[in-house]
Image (cartoon, rainbow, N blue to C red; front, side, top):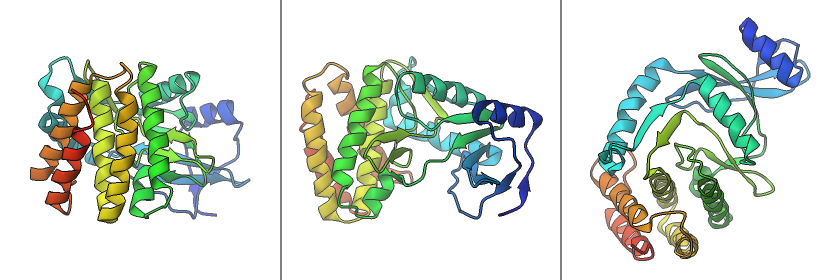
Length: 278
């Protein structure tokens, strides 16, 4: 067991009230990935209970905010003055997560939070959507369909999560989908379509990094999903079509998520867009 982690009095009190953990917390020997917006640390108590300490990365947030703005502007989301985004504080993320759970949307439980830190439930034996494609998992197409149906359900409930792009969508052993990471809040009349287009683009980006044949499997999955979208009124398909095209166009010329094979990107986006009725 690693070094002792000292928590603020407020976090200790909230943690005890939520989950009845009153023993000291220690740095776990297990590694846990961090992002640009937060530093994530895996902790454990004396009984071996694991939880995630998620702390704001101030320097990373400043850099990443500029990247987010450039992407959202470049894809056209911010062209509509009624659309917008901002970063949620840890306490706002805690409240948002709690509200999602009340709606029946699967998210990890936030045990405690303050102005800079969250203590979050650790979920074992899960894979994120990006990784199942990067690892060439045979169940990647089916898992993708589960994720797309789950995000559509949240949109039908009138909820936009923000920052949906593959690493933040977890698939459990029972194939249920759990959403994580709610740093980015987006809103506006185009938010649902923009969020779905983002998830479609980035998932395709991770798939093409595996190999081209896997990319065609994903395209078939998208076609099946979009066929059902054409029968609902959850989305403006013209707006969805626009954002999908804009995502492929934007990353073809700038940003860090450019396809390795530009010709394949053009072919993929053209075939996908032909199935999204305007």
